[in-house]
Image 1 (cartoon, helix red, strand yellow):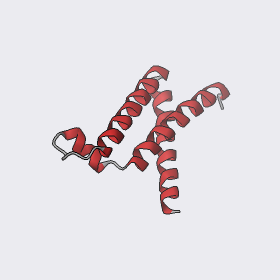
Image 2 (cartoon, rainbow, N blue to C red):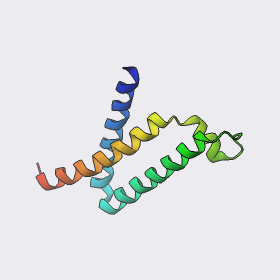
Image 3 (tube, rainbow, N blue to C red):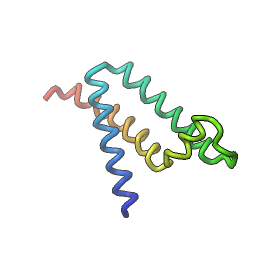
Length: 92
């Protein structure tokens, strides 16, 4: 249950950051940041699963970043990206 709560917290934080980024800097920057985060997460997940010794900086970073956190950040970012579009349409 603790991991589910932790996952939800990171999703909410990433979603809020994504909404703020999209409102502050625009849709293109939010999209590019989301794609970069998604690619980085996939690379780190692949490197985390390799059974080699961590020689490079990326391999050391992959060892330090758990897949639960990085996946939650990516999911939250895209949820926030979609929610920002709804917020922009609503104009509270």
